[in-house]
Image (tube, rainbow, N blue to C red; front, side, top):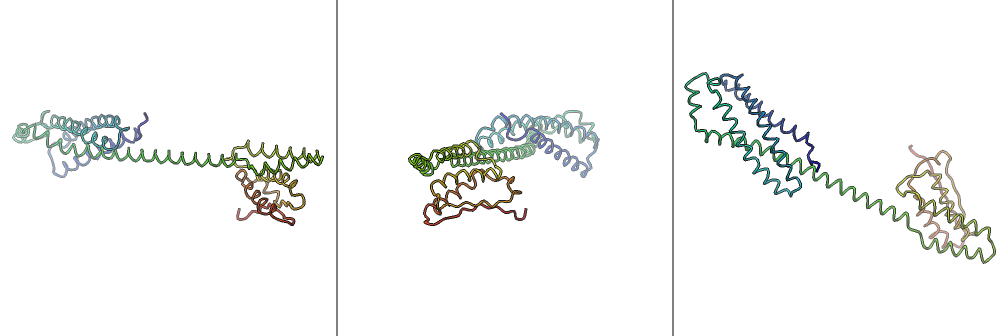
Length: 297
């Protein structure tokens, strides 16, 4: 599985931590004026490189727990840092106390005293500071991992919300107004009974074109204003058969705006409500006017 924390970020954090360690310890040695500074730097570099290697092993160990809850991950970081700290401490003891200590300490008596120090106490003392260092990195890694997990969950939630919104838009788009269809079929029946086949045929064609256009397009796509207006003209042409004496239509849109893009069917609910609450309930002629203006770009 793809790691939650980018591997490059994790490795850079390890290098950053150990570079910080190298700089701090070197500065401390310089301030205290330790002898054989160059020899100390060489051995310190060796300890640092070994520490980086152990830290990388710890990193890959923690990756095994990425799919676990947060508490087991914290326990893995706390427990996993113990052997890592001991390994680094043992290597540090070997580099400074076992391997040619005479090259580091010019005072032979001091060198012999260093050699005769209790190795267990010396290792444990350095292991404690190493443990604090490694556990601090491990907590940083867990924080980055948890933050990445939260971001992933937020992105999933956003995708689900967007999918739900799109599904709702499609559902609204694909709903066929049963009252509109029922009234249209009644009007068709009336035209047929009155022997007006040409008007009935025209109405059928308008109805067919209206539904084909409104149901085949993606409801999430924008359309040209001209296409949207033409669709509403088909709808109003059907309604004109029902209200031949009451419905008046005016289209007042400059040609320059016809190529502007608008959400599909943005006019449909407005026009439907104008018919339902304006024309259908009126006893006198009602004008439905569709206009557009450009303002502030």
